[in-house]
Image 1 (tube, one colour):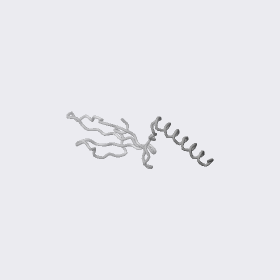
Image 2: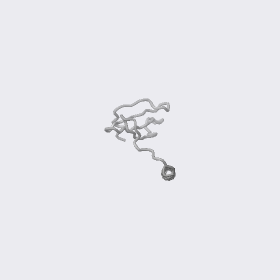
Image 3: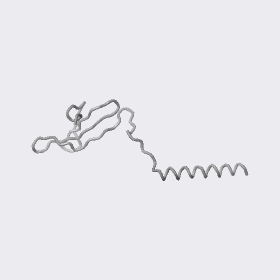
Image 4: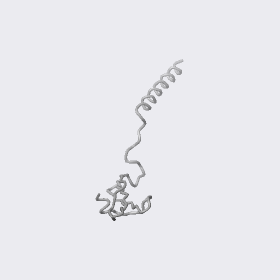
Length: 88
C-alpha cells in the first residue's frame, strides 16, 4: 500500500489504463500495478518484489531433490569406476 501511496516512480502498465508504481528499499524493489475502475477508485491488480542492481533473482532456483540425489550417486559411481580403472 505504501508503494502505491508514496512511489519513487511510475510507468504505464501493460494493460490499457493501468499504471505501474515502484518503491526501492535498498536493493529490493516493490512494484504495484493498479488501474482505476468506473467510479475512479484505484484497484490493485498485482504486486511483487525483486532485487535490483545485480540482476540476480531474490530466491535461488535449486535443482529438485531427486535430481540432486541421482547426480550425487552417479558422480560417486563414476569416481569408483575411475579408481578401479587406475588400479588395473
